[in-house]
Length: 510
Image (tube, rainbow, N blue to C red; front, top):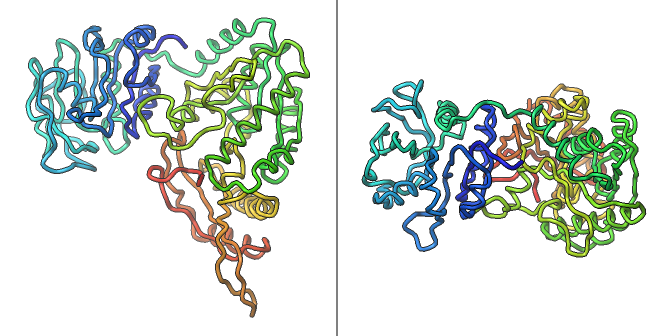
């Protein structure tokens, strides 16, 4: 997609992607770009407004992140958030310095002057702070719009230039009226609520048709919602030129290969080429414990298998993948954020490969993908299937991946999913799985001492996977899962429950 209603420049905040999400929820297409994007790249997007995100740096530090100064001369509305606020102040001649004390958590916002940005917001509300610097004086031409207990200049702006600055994070749920503030900013930019999955589908189908022409597309699928939606898009756009390939990498859950074949052949009516490459993958993973190495081996092997299959067909020019916006962000392609973990489908293709990538979902989040799937006519059981990572069970086994470990994990995972579905909790949660810890502990079964493996149950609630909280499952359900796993899976004598949220933890363990 060429144009963006609002560009969000990423200065490295863990919340940056939420800004784009909140704006999209208002029907406004927002896109992330690196903080150091060139002015030419920014103009090419033809934005109606710009948001400067938060970030971990300080504007007065030697290694501070700065955007192109020409951004402030485009005549576009600008909203600075946290670090973006300080940058806006700094670039307009104000003084930014370390605060007397760091401020994290909830604060009370007091509006002192009515303005377009705060229109319809109560005089007092709760906002979420996360900063250690503060603006000591206002830039010339700006005025205070709201304050808090510890921030005299909590919100300030220049209404004539349509430039605004917030010390807090309106994009997080803890800021009571943050969504309304972002909606107001979109109105200030003159944006209309036209972004939805119906319009996205029409544009992507037309773009794929034009790009592919008479060439062939090789589409990699796993049975998950992302690749299923990509295949459905391609089936709408270029049905005669589509080759759909499923690779069994030996890292799938029990009976998953059969289920994937049923989804595509019976439910989607798409011809599927199924390749069993399990021995190849497991052979290359032998002796490998480092999670990043595991991910890269799996990604490289996928590419090789697809390339070998492509050579069996004529005129294959493109490889389609289910890369999401979250994959791009976590792999640190979008901006100043640190790399969290490598995604096997991010980073382009190796030089020796001949085909080009088609990644129609790389601009949207998981919840948007689900809406797109429904728009394309996919069934709810496909669309709302729990996410399953591309590297499969390899990143749910701590340490080396081998057949005995996979067998233990598969048996435990079946029990967990069975209990969640029978209790009605599967559809209430975002993702649920077991992790084989490869840590032995002492136990007692009957009158015998055991020294066997431990399994961790991980169940989370989320909307797009960028943030998540552990699911508050009933104790009886957890007890049933634990009892069944220990009794039915030989080699496991202990079950624990992961109550970490994301952040600081990630959803997957590796």
